Length: 247
View 1 (cartoon, rainbow, N blue to C red):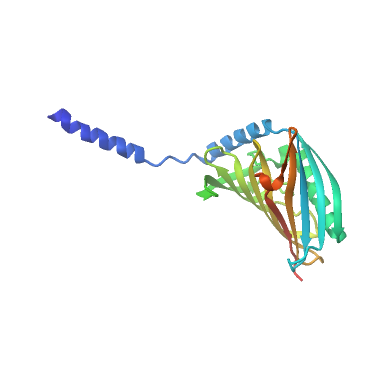
View 2: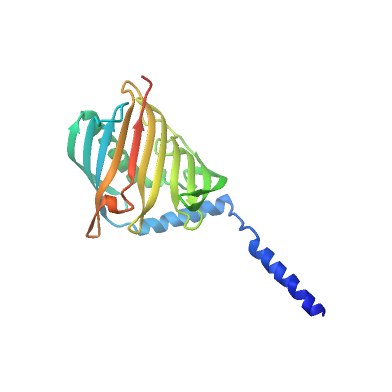
């Protein structure tokens, strides 16, 4: 009789154990796993090329003031080339696009000093959050030095893969006297087996220029001999860089 009474107790214990919440890893463990995931992701990078379309708008978003098309090629681990293929409208659009691409090249050639790692940042755990259907750990970033390549802000780390889905913040140091109050949002996704930045939104105050919005779209890409339309791929994300200043 005692043995029969014991079984319900064992079943109840099993149910309670199954319903116990999963313990969230500590901040150091999340950062260590994130760094390992980033290293593994970089090991899977392979050469690719993308055609990117940029449109520059003024305060009124109805008509683009400038349109720029750039061919961008990347070779691991740190080589990126670009060619401006077409420019229509104001020369300001080409000027801004060239500056963006040159900044990307600078970051690539200084990856160790711009990585999201314990060498460059102090991290603190903020919360858990669902981002586009994926459970994420949200961490605060505090740069360890004033460097325009580093951001003060927040990252969203996938709770399963430990890859960074989203980065948001402000540069630790203004890149120029002309630009201040910059706010960046970077989105990262899987693109044919590679973890790449696929979207950008940037807001800033730029002296004398007034409010402008730059929108970029990946229209086509090539990877390992495969060509595809950007709109048919996860790489086809709209990338917005909003540049604004007080009138």
